Length: 301
Image 1: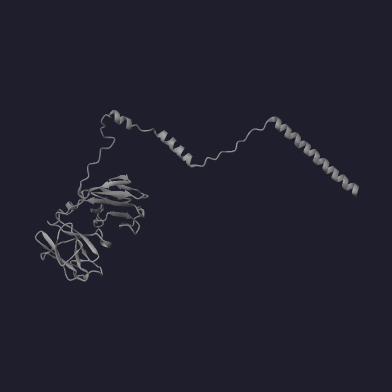
Image 2: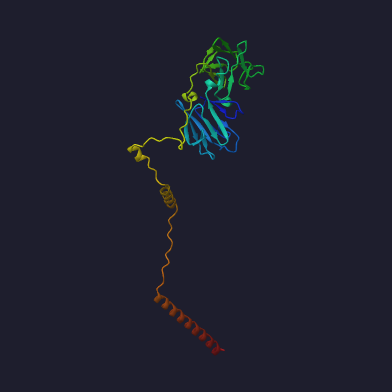
């Protein structure tokens, strides 16, 4: 899982616990944000073994990691993800809680509408936290499936335990129904339909969640280039821009239908003379026929 916060810190940090986590302006995303610079389905994070891959989903404004536009890239602790005007940063959860009291514990929602939300277990002198839907509880979950006083999490030294308070829909630890059970970092507890991952000392996180980002390479203007070997020289040759343009124009030409224009052939001079004489004879015949027609009408009259 990854811990993510908004770079401007205007909203609370959140956790990514799903294997596939989508981001965009549409309501069906895991993270739905209203922003004109976001596409409906802008990008997604995919967990693959010990890595998280960020993939652009054909967005209009692009997806960027540390200022570089990407289509697919592994991300880790310290990376800044830019989606339009939204900037998110992956933080090291171990360092992020270092300034809190020793033995920091929290519950991280990983189901339904609570997914990604973190609920710190801030124990008082009584070392007991009441969970339920009642407003008087220390941590309130406004769900009708929960009892008003559903369970209690207590702390004894460096360990914590959960106790079900005879709730209607039971309490589970790692999918086993319990009355009272110790819990440790990495356990999953469930209060009816609401599931939480226990975050605390000794939790095992994905390497990418806590791995530091290496310094970016030097810019091309300031970089020192080692002499190329003979083999490197063979593969480092770039085609000139003109050849690429010609290739693109050829490909574009292939896509258009190849219609041939009709050829206009010149007419020979002799043929022009013959056509002129023929026209004259046709005019003469026309005049003769008119005169004959007039003569016949006069005789008949």
